[in-house]
Length: 107
View (tube, rainbow, N blue to C red):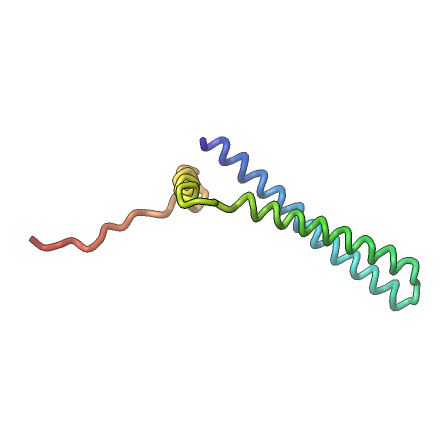
């Protein structure tokens, strides 16, 4: 996996996470509107809010699963390959990992 391909994948994951967080914010607003409608005994508005909350929750669940699948390595070899590729990206945080020599034996 080349550096450019890895960057594209990371950008794609970032977009998915942003979209997921947008759904979380949207669900919070819908919940507030639904509670207001319920407290005002506006059953029609409450039912509309409830349906919207359910749909937003389903969208969030799909996005959460998609984000998780995109970030998981399925085998140790995949993990090692991803790790080595991420080390090459400057500023990624992965490049700071260094090998540490074990204790030296006296001869």
